[in-house]
Length: 372
Image (tube, rainbow, N blue to C red):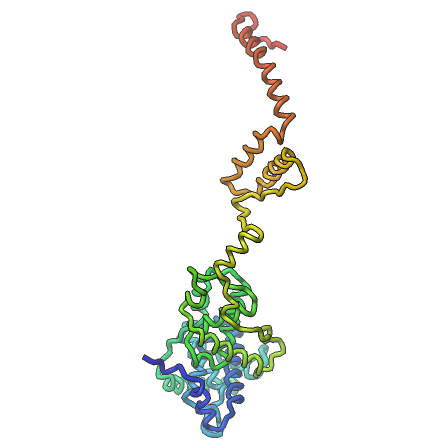
């Protein structure tokens, strides 16, 4: 069954605000400002990013049913942004007090994070009345459909399945893509799963980190990703970064690399070629490095190998340490003079010591005396 909250690009361009005379560029600007308003207030409240994303989706969906042109009985986007944050705080069970939300919203509206908002001030009561009044209107327009799936959870699930969850650069860039996607109309065009896959695509291209195939399949096919949706998501975010409606001076993702899914793929044969023709990939915790012998005689080369093995024994794992040390200790090439002299001394002293011991034990007169 088709979801009522996913639209085509033409339907997004036919929103109530645009039909009321607002230009598409101005509507994109107000949508970005509204979600950014939510993000700024959420930072003051220390809310998780997933809750802020849910509030952003409420905001976008509301304005697919209502207009933001106040001259034609529309509602200002900041009022709806504050209401969406208030509602998302409830649905995601973050337990922030209504008073704290109102104060955070008032600070962001005044662009002063250090502003002291008195609970008896007109500013406080204006925002309080606005949020409580528009909450009911928002619930009606959202048809009480408040279950929102966040791409952030999907992203971590997919990164784990691709065995790249510990790649910090890849993970952070993908997370930033998910955050910025809500500043656009992307949540109206595709579901959280497609946005999460597109975020990995963007992150891999931006960071240059290729992702290995999964059972011989490209990573996006292993995740059942839609290539067309990935391309569409990248296009929407590229246009957003180029347009830069929020006029951000520092935008680390404003570059325009070539986005091709094949460029993010690391094939299985590429890994094998690199491991056989390039530097061998060894695990230093379980294997000892081998020294390369060149320009020396065979005996000297073998001695160097054994010496390097003994010196690197400290890097070996617990299971290999005893074996490496024992092999190095018993090798006469490493200790030629010491082992030979000690063995000769032991052989020459053994018969004499036994004879003296026999005489000492057989004598009854010298009990308790010390023999030199």
